[in-house]
Image (tube, rainbow, N blue to C red):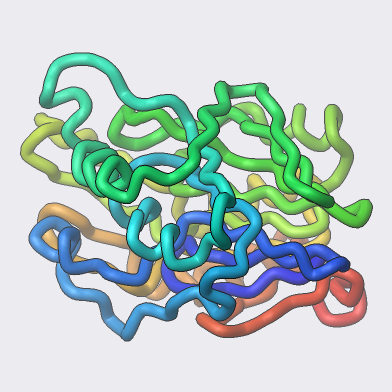
Length: 270
């Protein structure tokens, strides 16, 4: 497999036969800027619009679920794979309302997968893994397998205790795509604020990669949004990632938007 980083948590994942999967695309952040601030750099679109065989969502926060971007990326008739919709009173589900509305407008072929469920598309096998969202919203991490290789994409999960069982159940992962900005959240619909990072900080990302026996950690979900007091990420996450990865002996690859990594070369390149 090859992985190509886009913006924020967005990636393209390409199998050896050229089949393309996309995950957590973000091309337009306008609806987010009231809550997260403007992006620190331009957002990178899908590099092969209209060619993706499948689109994957870890969860339905708008910074991971840009419906228009997904619609542009998918080839005709291709489907979106996602977690179940949130249920409950309005304030409990408000964090996913915007993305749900936009997805409904695009009326994409959709498959809902419960935690622990699997689906396939061409060479890809996708397994919905446990995740814990800092706002209490429904979320998956995804194990994406093809060509005898495994990638975990962990959306914006917090730390949890399922990391070790993944290596025990599925084997070591070739690449762990993990969030690393550790923001403190102070949103009106989640009061009082916890004072605990709502997404893994760098040290947690490195520890999770180590527990999954990842051949390489690719950090994501950092460096784009910063709007105190509502959204306060850790400063200089790359320095913290580098120091902690070196301390723990975890191979680290910093990827910029547009960078590509062939997993067959990870051992030589990491």
